[in-house]
Length: 207
Length: 85
Image (tube, rainbow over all chains, first blue to last red; front, side, top):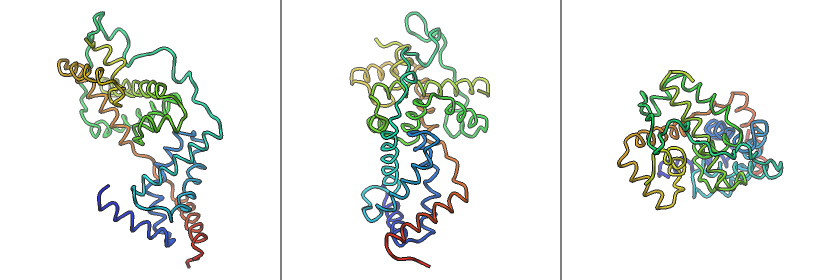
């Protein structure tokens, strides 16, 4: 946490405590979208909005307790993750095991490798060598959303919480109530699909 | 000796999440040192990860922001017992 950020947070919190509407607006604009995405990853699109609303209200109730030991954003998201986790428990929704898959498919088709385990056909060189370069293609952005949309729900949950929210594997196990080995398998599967899409995009310019 | 197949098909994801034993990790590192195909592959996997971290979310709509801000300010004023304006 940079000093600058904690100063910004402290000022914003003071304004929130004073009930200044502009301060609420600033906070909502900054975080609402990301909160909705995180909630959807845990509880599903349909209930995400309600969970986020509850999290906002819980956050306002807890404002007097905010001590600035973490950033305001971290604090807000811990409230949100808690709400979503509680809701998931209550709904007793379970991660569908077929999403985890029994057969252990790799990232590549088996024939990409020779009998001795070497590449039969090595990974091709990508034109785009940085995330900025890839994300600058409109078509790629569309392909990325598409591949994420089409992931089995459990895979999408796990990859969103890991890569987008930056949560540790342990936290993901705890929130979704699934074992560490299932989280690892789901993550591996999800990354495999996104990788395959990116690889195909680099080769053909489409997905 | 670790093969390209084992690295790419099963260990890559766990390597990125630091979920391997030290022995497996050492084997992956050594393999990457001597195999430029796998180095390329791991660079691409790391790139795929950072793509997702940078994905931006759609901003909330104006009516959505307005409604929520009103609700939150109202609640905060109710809590402090200090109705403003």
